Length: 333
Image (cartoon, rainbow, N blue to C red):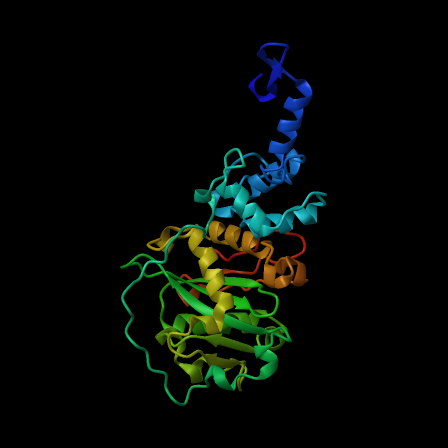
């Protein structure tokens, strides 16, 4: 009533009266100051789909927070599903901060609001001058113009535990590979490639070069590149010290790994089934750098390498990036 009230002057006095037209006029004017309506307000199914993806909700209704999508990846997945409504990444982040969604908050996002902790500077590693540097890597490899060029790294587990993960990413397709090793010795790393070379007919096409860091497990260059059939099996290029960005593809894969297996994980207690499940998820996760396609869409083949038992309880987790979406095969360990 207050909004439509006005003073009406009679013959000898004033009185307060109400006008519905005046009330509507004031209401309409005030609406202009409240901003645009929510773009997703009229499409409840679209909003629920985005929320479920970012919360890690699975098709059976269960929630696996390790499989949460980023806002950008959730939007890309929604576009693939054919939803008519669409919002920008910045708008979606704004909706999350403003608590537009029923359950989703900033705390559910992987990256937002988390400060990087500063740690002690590691001991400086010196590269032998005879080892090939990344600075001499051919330009087609740098430009990701052809397949068969990989980045490699090692993920260590809990302090005092021996098993580690050897992770690899193909530079063009971002195809992921992971191998569970009994220890971080250079010999264990070599045995992975020895076995792959035996079991992969097109090994030299699939593995043309490897870019890695200066860890001691990778520095036995002559032995690492020596083929079991004689000659050189691939090229190896070493990054500069403290330049992890020079192998950013495998570093990003490692960051995804840490979502599932945080620092301090004892890999001796992690079953190969769980690692295979991660690789299958990572192989089907849409990437902005791939125009929101997944590695599985770019890789039309897969291979399986049965790691020899003599390798010391070595477990090979092969790439899950295959069109069928089937879980990758592993050897028993």
